[in-house]
Image (cartoon, rainbow, N blue to C red; front, side):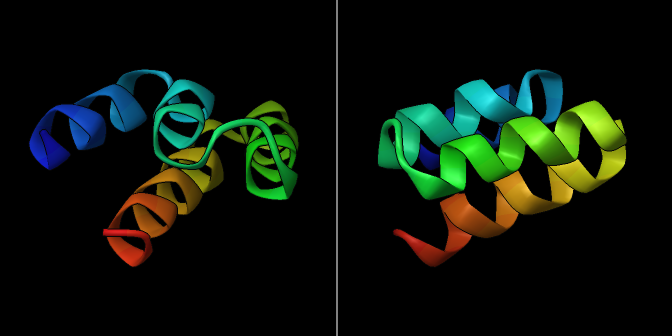
Length: 53
């Protein structure tokens, strides 16, 4: 299941974060990072998924 979340995080970073932690501060931070730049959004999403195993 974690592999699927990581693949989703690469394609749509906010969705990957949402699936891991729901709507909260990490979700909104990821939306902002994804708007500012796609790569920072991906890095943050993968970090959140790896941290919250």
